[in-house]
Image (cartoon, rainbow, N blue to C red; front, side, top):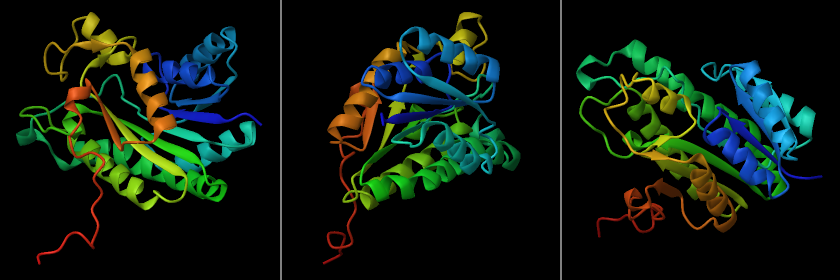
Length: 255
């Protein structure tokens, strides 16, 4: 039975490129996002390229949908080998830290932190039981480098990044890989890029360079196959130099 990649937050940017890149290696693709019509269009597009894919509509701002979606994907494909989580809503905007409030952070926490935790929890038993699998998460650069007037999603993405690093250390001897891709550019073909093209850059933070999603999908394929780093950034020079260092009580002493 061929392997399956489940893309949570699949869209016309990185999501479809990721399904295509893994699909070229024989993977089938489960595409998860809110709008069924957009997912169906992506499934049709991939089918035309000889890649088997299926749509799984779901609102990822509701953490309780995670196990339901995972069960639906397993029912359709029989297995899940790779999960990529990276939903970025087209209307997601930065906010100054001085104006951030509980309601804003609670909204972002569901989509960017609580739901991925539930997704990963739902697939981990299968992957650890098999002794193979991958948990991948996409975040923006504010998860790594806080910036004035660009808060909101960043603190929650930073918490999710922290979570992936912890997962990586805990899963190091299980055959399951956990890694995160940090993107500092606008992804061409994505909703954010469409907003920039129409001049609606509110909350994006001015002019930001772009990156083709195929380039990011290749980063993920390299991370999945090599498993030699916890984090990859684009552009690469933004990757923290100590991204493979794991904390250990045995080496963290005051002696």
